[in-house]
Amino acid sequence: MTFAERAIQFFSTLEFALPLPEGVSAMNPYKNPEVMQVVSTFFQKFFGDEERRVFAFGINPGRFGGGLTGIAFTDPIALQKYLGIHSSLKGQREPSSVFIYDFIESMGGVEAFYAKFYFTSLSPIGFVKDGKNFNFYDNPDFAEALKPFIRESITRQIEFGAITKVAICLGTGEIYKFFKALNHTERFFEDILPVEHPRFIVQYKRSRIEHYLKKYQEAFEAALKMSES
Image: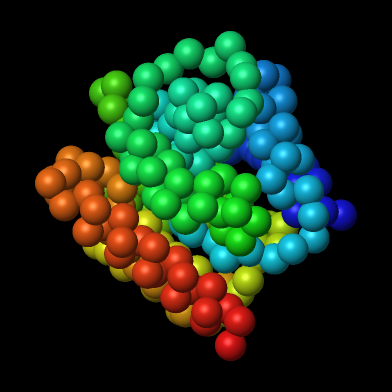
């Protein structure tokens, strides 16, 4: 099976049945047939091979990005503008998606980038509370209860074709702490390289965007070199 075939199989059968904290709802866009068509097209277009890739993990999909399109850090506008995938999905530019696709463009564009890297999230299911994105680690009890689901999701996604020498963590605070501890126990990857989360950069460091684009370039290139050593 190709990377794409494994990925499509995973997302098309993704189920989530854990109890949620009060006021929190889950987003599983893969139950939407149009989203699965978009996801299938994406993987067939950019991952229709048996090459292994460096994995980069976010937290959980956001309601205007992956929680809507099914593709990590990709809002409906980026879906068409950068990936050339047309759909009837409606939405606006999502700040993290803007930064990520600026970064991908700086790395040579989508074809060159996705040939070497794969974006995903520790939890492929997103969460919303009070109309806003909810990060699972904001509720320690929920984060603990979610660990088996995250463990299984990472294990299955590694089987797509992950380079296990190194992974990238999009976040240097709580998410990195969580991922590092889980990886210490499970030994998914030999090393994890953290970079600041796109949302943090856009929200708090907008005047230094170029600095962080360069930092991302250096981190992803370092991960490639580590994977080849």
